[in-house]
Image 1 (cartoon, rainbow, N blue to C red):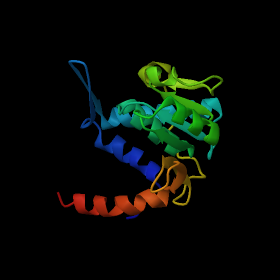
Image 2 (tube, rainbow, N blue to C red):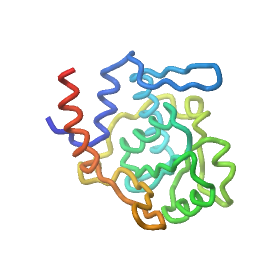
Image 3 (cartoon, rainbow, N blue to C red):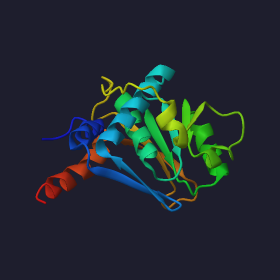
Image 4 (tube, rainbow, N blue to C red):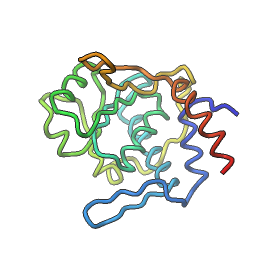
Amino acid sequence: MARPHLASVVEDFRGIGSRTAVVVHRGNRRYRTTYAELATLAGRFAAELEVRGVLPGERVVLWGENCAEWIAAFFGCLLRGALAVPLDAAGSPTFADQVINEVAPRLLVGDQALLHTLENPRPPHLLFSNLTRSLPAAPLFTVAPTVTQETPLQIVFTSGTTSEPKGIVHTHRNVLASLAYIESEIEKY
């Protein structure tokens, strides 16, 4: 059965439960996040967007190293219909400032060291390192009614074959077209 939108993956995460979804190594430590924990954090991030009044179609910049909090923020955006604008953690502060000026995000979410390099003024921000402590306790799993396969879900900046990166808008359908085949084949295993 075709997914109605990519936000439906969060419900899958809830169903998978205690299986490990993400492992992050920080120094000598290993931090494990289950699918259920990831889904709950995504729902809590969606609740934070609701509290902040971030509306469907508004932008949220994500700038940080790969981690469970990054994934949760991305899926939290999908639940509320906000457009995620992921930036490469290895990207320059100058490029990040250009993207921020172009997309006019309502919120920045990222690593403290990266966000600290940005010019002022900037929109409100949250740190990945503080998400589990700063988000509302109750998750919001209800998908915004505006979210469909045609809804934009992210803006990815890529240069392709040109010299200046441009923001490419992906819809839920764009990503689901690739995901459907992978999901149908992986079920065999």
